[in-house]
Image (tube, rainbow, N blue to C red):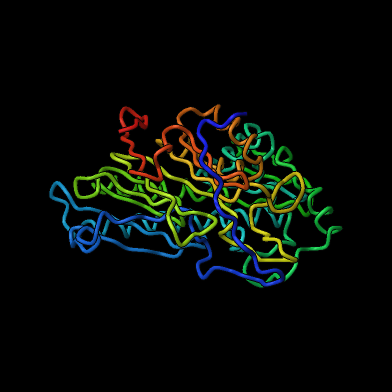
Length: 367
């Protein structure tokens, strides 16, 4: 498929063969919140707080307005953080007490009751597996021999990868919405919701803010950014980081009244082995890290439009990802790969004056 818009190739990063590397942050986002300037950054009108969640830092920024006091804004942030902590506790496979861990531990034995919030995410994951032709598959949790926490020096043995990959089958997950249960039918199967749970959790936090009267806010979780309203009367500005050189920005996206920017990339958690960068986004079809694309940024009106598609695009590669995203015309996309940078028309000027969008009637419109 011919690209909708292309840019010249970007310079390749020079790896250091045989050296294990891990960024200080567990998730180094393609996107970063960009301040409007020194004055805005220091403004006391903005109330900010952060928490560690889902292996990354989640930042919340609220602007008190319409009589909302600074104290009330902080109480709203506290409530949003409690909401997000509660949902994350259900969905982490690293917490042995979570519902996801129980599903994995009882694979091949019995079904596990799951709360509605988790059932919604599991059903979303099943729909994504169909829409992406298997490029998105939460049962990659079975590929447990891979480690991207900074301890690994080499990939798992091929025989181990083959054996674990045989248990990667999204269609095998059995959900009973009426009974409220989930069941993995084979021992050794496991689910990992890392690619599909974070955005709904951030959205739940943002909705909690709104229920507490907040009209202007930003939630940034490791490069996934959700906004509502404005920032001091101006659109929220999101910086898109270059996955080949994450210390610099490719450009900016401005969002007014709402929207989401989601990112995926091979620069978040990885290690070097024999001159190759092996990263945490695994291809369900091979059991190995994806190749081709280095980073994907998606911009849309809401979480439901983009959730899971960044990881799926990384699996599919540039051409197939473009074809997939063409089925979702409400999404603006930017991808960086071996062939350079590709973007949909709405992000064509992201390197210059930046891309500007306004949420109107539930749709993002170019400003």
